[in-house]
Image (cartoon, rainbow, N blue to C red; front, side, top):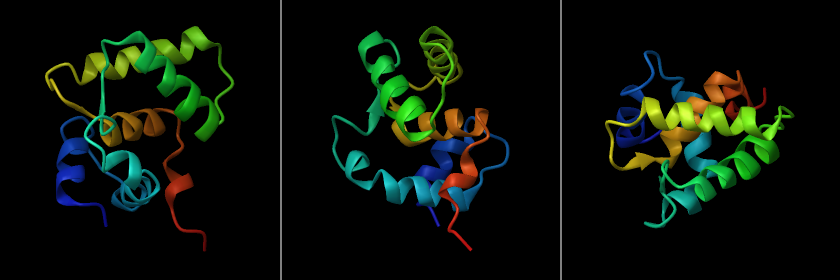
Length: 110
């Protein structure tokens, strides 16, 4: 299962956390999460949000929507998390994945 700190970070914004998916995401992004400069998302930095669009939404989730639509989704997550000065990358990605119905991709294959 995902670490308690990851669950707590996501639970601030999501009513029911898919702990299996969150654990899969934490494992998938372990290297990114282990570095202080990449474990957080700077939601006020447009370049950072564009990297989330390009590397997570388009490459990882395979989203095909227009760039401005995906960028707006990132901005909305940033707004949802605005109370947190330090926005957990894992929580940010989890919220986006949930929004796009993609959490199952981190479930083990049966």
